[in-house]
Amino acid sequence: MPRRNRPNRSRKKAHAERPIAPGWATTEPGADGDWIVRNVPGSGAAKLYRCPGCDHEIRPGTPHIVAWPADSTGSVTERRHWHTGCWRARDRREPPRGW
View 1: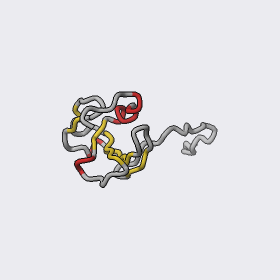
View 2: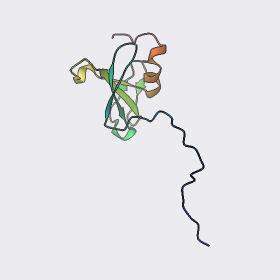
View 3: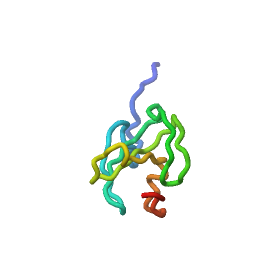
């Protein structure tokens, strides 16, 4: 008898926080103000960046977050590239140097 490929409806789906879709920006509130945040997939990360949260390199091909203040013009000079974990932990750290 052939196998049926039906979804298992008895399994409950976990409604975890969904990652931001690549190329789309969302607004996130924070203790340090509102931020425009965009997810950069590994395939879209072609340059070397330095994360302001941990001061380590974000190597090409590494998925990460780009964020800039919501009240800014959004110019390239105001954008910062963060490791995803560093971005999520920014409220539990000291403010980054040079900001």
